[in-house]
Length: 176
Image 1 (cartoon, rainbow, N blue to C red):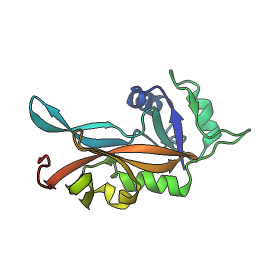
Image 2: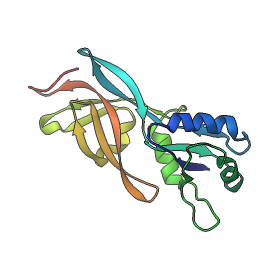
Image 3: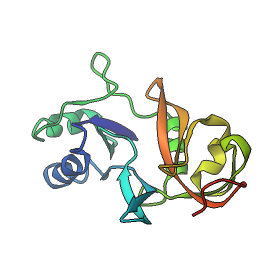
C-alpha cells in the first residue's frame, strides 16, 4: 500500500533519498517522488524540464505502516506520515493510487500531453496522461505550457499542474 509522507517543499527528493538509505527495504519497498515534465523557455528556446508533481510530499510503498512510522522517526526534516487516526495509518485509496499510477510511468514521471489549442484556449488532447482528465481541467496557461486539473487526493480537492506540448494552435495562437 502507498503512504504519503509530508516533508518540506523543495526537500521531497532529499527526504526520499534519506528514507531509501535509512529505512529497511522490507518496510519501504519503494520510496518515490512523482515528477512531471513541462516545457520551460530558456534563452529564447523551449526545453523539457522535470518538476515535483505533489509539492511537499514523498510516497512510500509498505505493508508494515507502524514499523515504517518508527523507522521514519530517524529521518531528518520529516514532518509526519499523513492519514493518522488514533493508532492506524491509512494508505491512499485504490482510486487515489490508481490516479497517481495513471498519471506517471514506471518511474512515476508524468510526461507531456500533446494538445491542439483552439478558440478560447479550448484544448483537444491528442495523447498523454491528460487524456483521462480533460473534463477536470480548471486552468490553462499557454504561456507556461501547462494546465491545472482538479483531482480528489487525500480527502480534498487538489489542483495538479500538468505539462503540455502544443502541436497546433488556432489562428493568432502561439505555436511551438
